[in-house]
Amino acid sequence: KKETREAAIGGMEIKQDWSDHALWWEQKQRWLLRTAWTLEKYGIHADAKLVFMPQHKPLRLGLPNGITLRLRVCFSNPVFQTVMGICRMLNIRHPEELSLLRPMEEKKKKKDKNLAPEIYDLTEVPLSSVSRPCLYNGMPAHFADSPEMEAIYKMLSVTQPPPAPEVIAKQYRPASVVDKAHINGRWLDSSRCLLQQGIQENDKLWLRFKYYSTYDMDPKYDAVRLTQLYEQARWAILLEDIDCTEEEMMLFGALQYHISKVAQSEPQIMSNNPAMDDLDSALQSLEVKMEGEGSSASDLLENMTAPELTDYLKIFRPKRLTLKGYKQYWFKFQDTSISYFKSKEESIGEPIQMINLKGCEVAPDVNVAAQKFLIRLLIPAPEGMNEVYLRCENEQQYAQWMAGCRLASKGKTLADSSFQSEIQSIRSFLAMQKTNSSSSSANASEESINTHSLVSPRYHKKYKPKQLTPRILDAYQNVAQLSLTDALMRFLQIWQALPDFGLSYVVVRFKGSRKDEVLGIAPNRLIRIDLSVGDVVKTWRYNNMKQWNVNWDIRQMAIEFEGNVNIAFSCVTADCKIVHEFIGGYIFMSTRSREKSETLNEELFHKLTGGHEAL
Image (cartoon, rainbow, N blue to C red; front, side, top):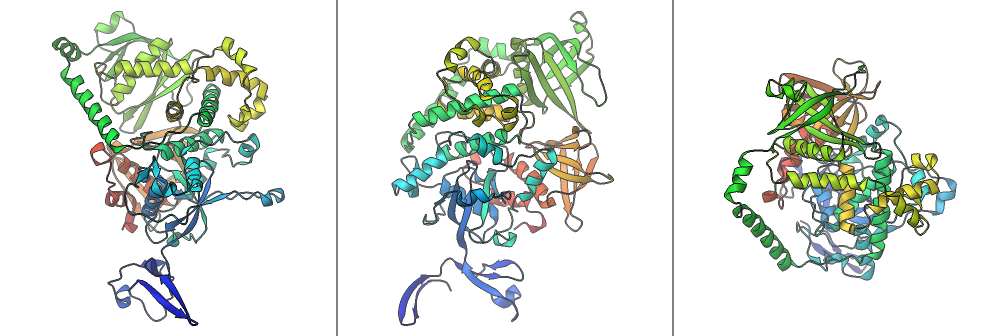
């Protein structure tokens, strides 16, 4: 029985709160949390070593923005619940997207002995079981207690200034896809508690976004979540965790510069008025309702006959060891399919091929300066995915066809009301990449930028700062008018549009193969990469997956897809539980919907990710 008791020790009366204490069984590595059970029922004999200790202990937590917090976390619940508690304290919604991982070992130099990072202490913050913390002036009440606590919350919710070039150079940078795979072996198991995984009091862990399927991001409520996701994306680009073109790097640099500039000058308005929020949502739903009611008969008739998109485009099907280039055909876009013909005149007859885009992957491959406008399509097929490139001649053609492909991949036709806004959004993205040399050269002398703080070390070697300044200022002209929130959202949109976005790598050995290969795990698919050539050999989508199993004895995963496609592999750089959790986690993320967004189905998460150790 646990309660607050007074203990008389050496004549002194000490008041001690035992309510958070529980027994830990060392040999079996488990907590005895069922207080109604007897020791006999647990199977405990006289030789068992039991430790009576608190369930909540201090932990050092490294955040994506580089800040280290010291806070009390639960060592007895599964890590999934521990992360929920941390996110509740820090005011981060949708904690299912984040997890904890062991940090990389830092190489310490003798000179750096006195440069220990500052740790901000939150161990006095009371632990709350409420799903959403009570907000005061836009921040959780416990951060509004003192100016010091308010300053810590500002560090969490406001972007950090660009890091010094030497700080970037010191950080670990993965040199290959195998290096990236090693990092994913560090994730903690969500179904087991910290103590079961060897984590002790005051150890350091990293809190990171693990699943790249950000859901329901609302800057009004997600100040900390948005800032930390931006910081994780920014460091992924600076440390070359994700590849991007030189042009994209200049745009990322310009956005970082703009975000830093605006964050320092723009006061952070933190307001939270529930009555105003209710009014906002009521007006929004009324607007949607009126939009639906306001359709005239002619509008409805127009929507019934879906528009067609036709033009000459070039197509290329990349296959290994082929040197054949792009061929021009007459393309016709109808409903959610693309058909192509030898010429416009032959378009009355049968097409050479009809490609159904529903459920396909659409990725841009654009370089405005070089007038390169490519649309990368990954078309679902029984044996994996077929890759197709479409080459457009100009921006206008690219914007229309890209918008059509994006809508078709979601099962929408060109008649959909979002077609024009999609075109507009693509055009504004292209406009950002255009250079404006006349105005930037005039501003170059006025603006002093440490450009090596804004780009990855590869460009430190390639260009001097004075060569980078005009290029970053060129890109800056196109984003200078954005508000802080819009700039953050735009940075994340461009990051999410990169071809390799959302891929977490693991080195695996496929059944029947004698060599190691890389498995890329994305929010909606798995990819197989041949290490000898670095090419994607196969792609499998989750929505074609019938079932997946883990043989825990031999640590092997087996997955069955539609069309009698079966794959099996063992994991080399990570435990197969980590891969199992990634796949189950992404399937769980896809089940979330607005109606249920406030309640997190924890039981379903454990069912999909827990394996034989599921609670």
